[in-house]
Length: 290
Image 1 (cartoon, rainbow, N blue to C red):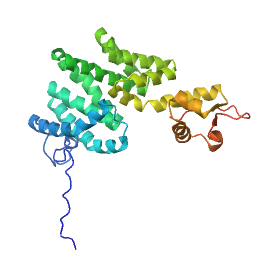
Image 2: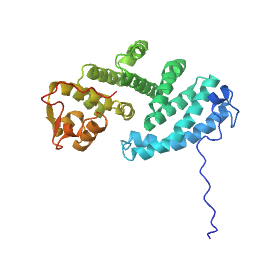
Image 3: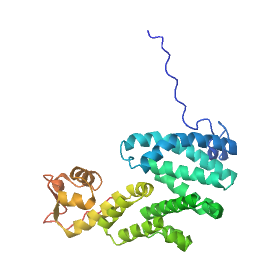
Image 4: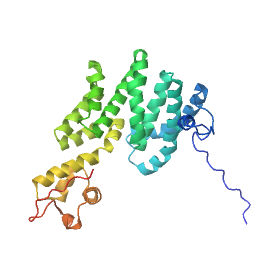
């Protein structure tokens, strides 16, 4: 029998810190309180140490490689960022440290494709924290502020291009903000989606900044489904290669998308060379899956 001791379990990032929302709902405290700035700063240093490689992967364009493995590694970081956000919000000390925490949390959520946490993070960052500290921002941070405003605008656009929340955000921005490159990009995406210019949309996705591209990644499926519904109403069938080109997918990925997301049948997918949208005996137009 081996006498080797098993390797000690790796401690989960931020495990020793309590989640404030649970404490506020009457749960017993089981960790270090993050209603303390020194504790927040300690956890934030640990978060940044683990988050930096993922940030570098996104900004270098290497994110899509081994994305699933990266997403698994990001889950503890996203959870630790939630604890930090709650601590910062509870202290109500809106300053540059608050900006650092929420920007890092937003990056973690985008990299992990955690849109639920991303939305909450960006709303507080853009609507509450930035207005409190915007006057004293240095030029680099001011540029970053517009990038994150663009991320929120794209996130709202992905939810509903005609939502009041999207329009409300734009109305609250200054003319200088609206004319900045990040917001001009958002308006271009809005125009392409509203006019259903899908090829223009995918072209914009290719030119997006790394973080804006991550926000748009989950929106591509919705755009493709809408495109399919329009093509279905216009054509009885199309070559798979042509359809894949329009949707910016490989032939194999296009077939998989039609089968798994749009629920196309084996008869519609046929021999793999032609996609049949509707038969000669049917005028029913399949609706995109919501």
